[in-house]
Length: 182
Length: 143
Image (cartoon, rainbow over the protein chains, first blue to last red):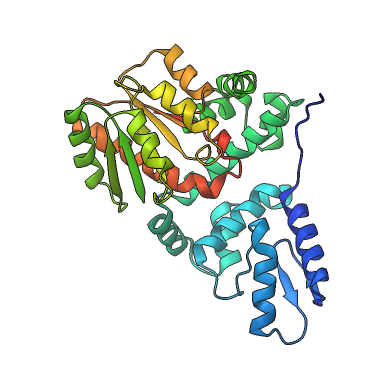
């Protein structure tokens, strides 16, 4: 028996699945920025239904641009922020405000009303999830993870991990490792 | 949001239900006295699965440890979010429940205000976690 960990890129998987499925339906389209799709020509209700049905097994759904919820827009922008080293250094509030076209205070209000958490806390939770997935991939030290995800120090990362999950990174890894053997 | 509480202590169940009513998210609570009652409920095809299960450890008939193992063994139930809700603060118990598949570990608070705060935190975090992680098994959280 050979055991592996799977390393994957969700955006690439999404692009591949959408491309394959839409090609199979004979639809003319283009994939623009990550997470954005343009269907060429007139899109009938019937074709829209076919697309929805083809993508549903992969848990992929399409949302008409302009109708998307502002909170989803904030979450998406946060993902971009965490994934892209070039924008990460910018001030988050200015970045979100410019990206979504609303003042930061109104974005923050809408966000906490719907998600019961602040934008700042949501970013922390997402970053800790990044830390977890890197820890689980293995072959990378906590110091390297701290550097990669822009933490000021490994101590800062460890403190935030403990504060967010109630566990230290070492305990978290030990639990996951033990789960595999039980 | 549908929530299940499994606890043999009637006072603890009442205390929990009162605290849950005071948090800002609207919830529906279903209560059981032991692990076996929970498994019977979950295996009924007419049952709509809860978003969150609070599970005591020391109970008659079937305790929380055994119940948790049964849930994780069952392909239909293995993705349910389980919060252990116990008076035990033994590090061994805590780690053992995580290893057996618990997502959240909560030490039962004694004061009502503290309980309200804790339940609120767990319910909200469970709500948020759907958005923040693709891998449910890595959702671990201790209060």
